[in-house]
Length: 92
Image 1 (cartoon, one colour):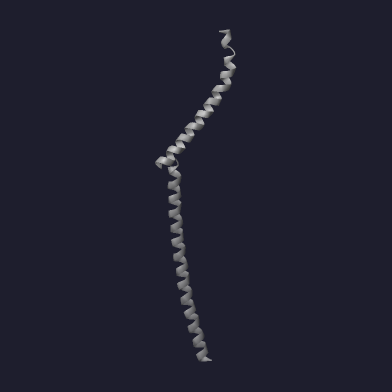
Image 2 (cartoon, helix red, strand yellow):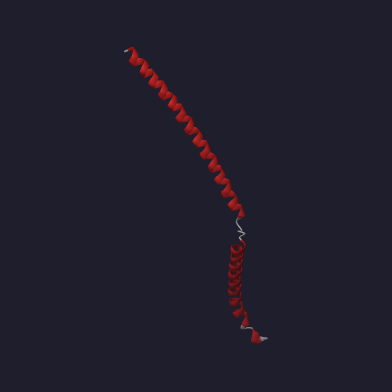
């Protein structure tokens, strides 16, 4: 038994290193499996991105509607101004 006492410090150093190596290999294997099978682990994040894209599209549509209504309104105002100027020229 006294001969095995020197193995305890060696085991205390070797086991954590082996554990770290195994963890790196397992992570690598998981990433490779995701690439090969096309199943990302971060599916909720891609769902959020799709939802945000939809919201941005809605905001863009609404902005375009507002801009069009403003343009139509300004066109009507321009016509009114031109009519008024035309009426003023005729009276002068």
